[in-house]
Image (cartoon, rainbow, N blue to C red; front, top):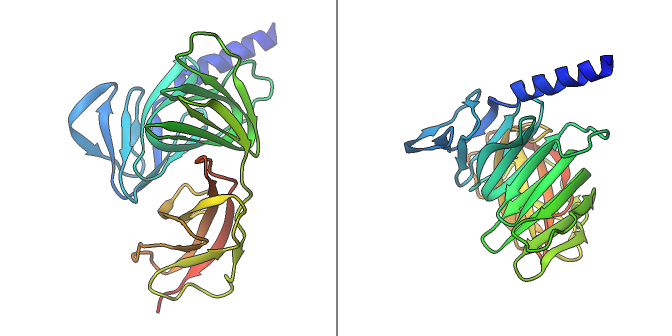
Length: 280
């Protein structure tokens, strides 16, 4: 009986604290384009500490980033050119509707949960988790989901026959499109940084990684913190020589997160490294 009362208390307070969410860190131009489900005639610019509600729609632009935290402790980051709606699938489960770009989330683990504790909705699937670190990306023609820790369930939408969800574990990913359906695969390993012994003193920050077999692109994100909640800039490169085009990075210590992307669009596991920016 006492356990039942505790569970009811937990569920009640989880419902109460999902929203509002808080913007932990905003870099560049990030707007609210709808408030509580109502489109705004003039978008509202966000700043650190901004309060976000159920039904709000967020938009990031080129070289702009936001990290936000729900009341239950879930933390998500949006990189450049991404858009999400803050929603929920039930009274106690938050759901972000990813309309464009990418969202990366860390969810508190609950191995005893019998159903999802957090969800990402994309046009062709629902990605549900019970505690993990994962990334979801949506393009017009395809979507991807990648898991670095824990397990996610990918449930295709708009199908005539009810299919069991595809289970994706750490180190795996899935691509979803209208032609092939859902295709699971192992993620590429984290790129290994080479030749990074001295401080970054040149006008442009550059990294060289050992080529990853199967990679067609590389992605680098630079953040002021180890958890990558305060992302400063990012770049995609077709070669293992990754050059950041942003010259405004101030002198100081930063972290770079490097990933390799395969021909299907799946972004692999990440390797992060500390470096010193010391332009003379």
